[in-house]
Image (cartoon, rainbow, N blue to C red; front, side):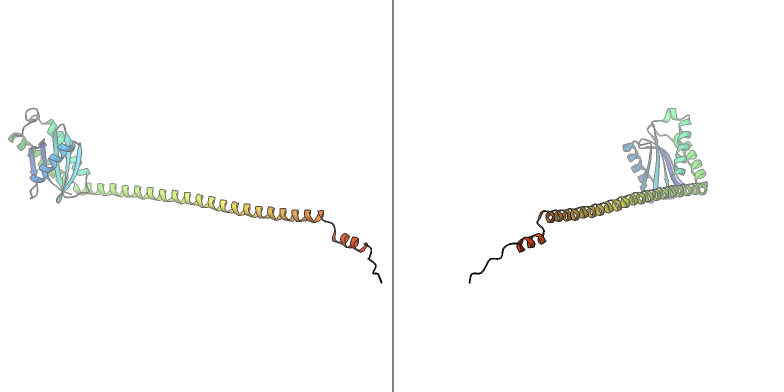
Length: 216
């Protein structure tokens, strides 16, 4: 990651700016400054063209830098914080807070150049830190996803067990009702047989009846 451009602005008026690489930043910077004023947020990151613009907004003053890498947000943030601290300690601030001047521009071009060279020189270590941070984030997300999968599997097993239990209970209930129904039908049949005269008695009674005589 390389910081290629930076500036300090009061509203839309640029107090000081410096570009280390060729390219036209003024138009994009003006658009970013306008968006920062509309949003009035302490920090913003805006992708525009081939660059990423980072801003720090404090008491109406915007500290801006452009980088060529969207992954590293730690280095630009540290750069803008150092620039803002230096700017606020500058004795010219009490006189030039609301209007740009050659004195402020000359002074802060040196400050911007100093910090841009410092943070661009340390970019390798910063990139490693950023990569480590990103790897940690990925590990945390993967761990969270695994936990969610295990929890879902646990809930599914509980649901499956309950479903199996209910199915078994329904089958047992149906079997029990069928047995009770068969037992009831058998008892009813036995009861009917016990209330009817014995067939053998009927035949005996029939045999005792007098045989009618045939007249000759």
